[in-house]
Length: 65
Image (cartoon, rainbow, N blue to C red):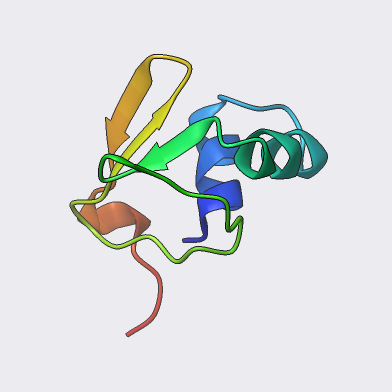
């Protein structure tokens, strides 16, 4: 799952445009580092943080074979 899709799936943003803006403004961290690529592919175990909310990507969110 891509980062912008994950933010929408979690309900942390309402639209893809909002996800893009918040990611580009440096408001999102992945594994403790600011991530500015909305297309960043997330893997199980990645920690995503936005506005004090944290979630760990689980196996159910993985895409691909």
